[in-house]
Amino acid sequence: MEQNRKDPKSLLQEGAMRLGLRLDDQQVAQFLVYLEQLKRWSRRINLTSITGDKAIVERHFLDSLVGSMGFKPHQGLRLLDIGTGAGFPGLPLKLYHPEIHLTLVEAVHKKAAFLHQLCGILKLHEVFILTERIEALYPQREHQGAYEVIVARAFAKPKLTWEAASPFLKPGGRILIYLTQSAARDLSPVPGWQIQSKDYELPFSEVKRSLLMIDSIG
Image (cartoon, one colour):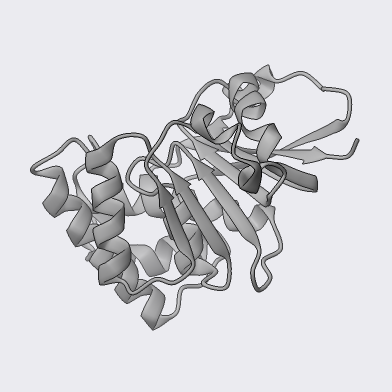
């Protein structure tokens, strides 16, 4: 009951701490703007079925941030988020690691419009929003083998996600897929790839999740 009465700022700070992460004041302020814009737009278009502050903070923001444990950021690292929807997990990762270059792929025009407005409000740099299906990128040479990290959350089953993402991955790069723990066991080893998983619990609901890490080694 006490957690339900906490404001979003406290939930962000406490939840991040429980995951072993730390948000500074600017990052917290950016996430609060994200929260308000998400709720405002969701009243008009179907951005997310999760509407409560605590649930959004935990199931969207904090869950997305777990991916930051799956790569080492550096200036100019290129990260691709396929099927990003309302920006998850790519935008929370950008807020946590502002030095990365982020490309968001979202085919639904209304969702892409939300992403454009949100990035403008937050004054984010090096964020590129592509309003098209992932299949449309395959023939575009500038995307082939161009990304060090590719992330996906609620995109497709693990094998389909890996197949969709792999053409865009740099040699030695990593694909991060957010899953339930049971779904993370469904992907068998593939020649030329190394598969690891990191199990975790969401900090307030204790929902069990897994971050699947697929490395290109061939």
